Length: 330
Figure 1 (tube, rainbow, N blue to C red):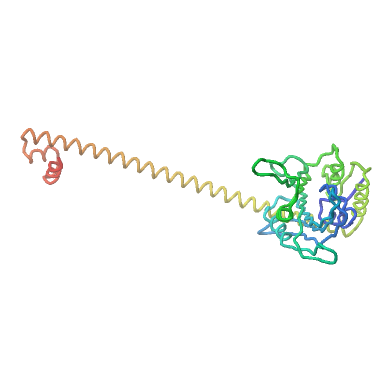
Figure 2 (figure 1 turned 135 degrees about the horizontal axis):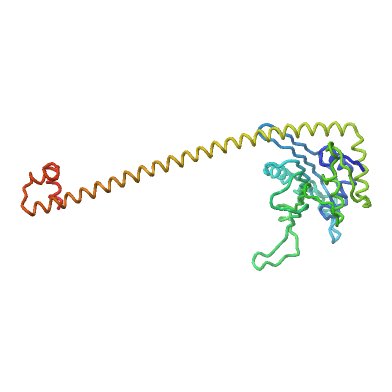
């Protein structure tokens, strides 16, 4: 089955604009019972020259139902990036949501403006260095810092200041599917990518899951939509610009590193030369001082033997003043 490649922002947006799919997909990914999902305006950040990055962001306001039957409002922030980037951008966009407040009903007919708990989802088109698994879940755990006991409670103050995260490394997705989540994530698996056309995935994964069926149908429509195909071409153009600028940046960094290495080597050589000269000068000074001490000792012996000052000066090739200084010091 040939489907549009959802690693493209336009395709992923096309897929996630189906509210039922977005709600079910995020429910499976976050392991939550999302009963209502409101899609908020998304952003696509494309920067070149000084800051080369392509980052796609979608925000959702969700109502989740807990295992105890309680309903809670949360914000879900979804960000997708094809290239390695400065993590500060994720922090900046996350900080934007931490500052937002939403009207929340706390009593019948009474609403207040409160910050909502945040959950983050990161879909990465590149591999992290140390985490080798396809899907990483970062869960908050309340723990007594004194004895390590895990607490089975939640506190609104803590919930609003911390968040859970899911990180999906698309290049690490495997084809040996086990769980439902793994099966659904197969639609991102780039090993299905069509040769010569990265817009298309020759999907050969599971098709039995009801959610997966709906997602595949949407991705089939996406690949047949001219507007989507044109925007995929545009993304390719942006990626080529980013790749070129990143290559230029890397070349410039490499050049600067080489110059820095040469500069450091030159400084090291100069320091070693200066140190060698210092040691040589010190050795010569010590040699001269030793020679002076021997001359002083000889002058004292000659003086004790009754040799005249003038003869001592002649023998040692020193002035009368210098001899007087030596004899005065001793």
